[in-house]
Length: 237
Ligand code: TMP
Ligand code: ASP
Image 1 (cartoon, rainbow, N blue to C red):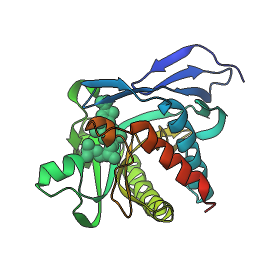
Image 2: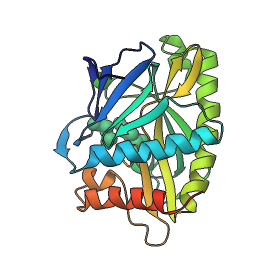
Image 3: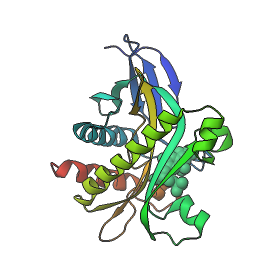
């Protein structure tokens, strides 16, 4: 399969066509942004780490019955994925209060939530991805009732799988963001699952091993991403 012309460039990835209309080629970049692009930088080796970390998560989720866009790794920085029509809703799952939820609800970061919290955001950079609910999504026609329900069902399942999987690696899954798309009529998981899109804390020290190190200038950003890759690949299940 050959790398065709670039069809999209986002903040963290470039997407290229292939000879097959159902398949796109994804290249992960080292560029890092935060606060809707206000903070810009690079994280050495991030593209390679997030590509390989996402591949581990996608393969593991597929093996547990979650449909994803992942096809295969091409090399350290690139993967082939199914060409989905992305649903313009970002799905966030939270197990522990942190980030914008801690701020919005006046909770101390690290406060456990009695049950997982599902949130939807409108994927729109110009608006800074505002928080929305099902009613908004349906009213502005960015998703159907069936798609919203399917995304919620998959997000809760994925959360259960990932919490358990990360716990075995001594990592607390604080929260994470998912994106879904439609492929041949089916809602499947897209985008990436990486320290860019999840909050991972070490179970014992509570050390942050994710993009908050970049957002909050905590240092050792690349080392944190490497630690996640290392823990994912050190244990089999
Ligand atoms: P938040 O607390 O800033 O709302 O972030 C919740 C989770 O979503 C966190 O794991 C980081 C992830 N996230 C993204 O992947 N992309 C984004 O643009 C934002 C704001 C958060
Ligand atoms: N990805 C978002 C941005 O660029 C925000 C974030 O991850 O904090 O700006």
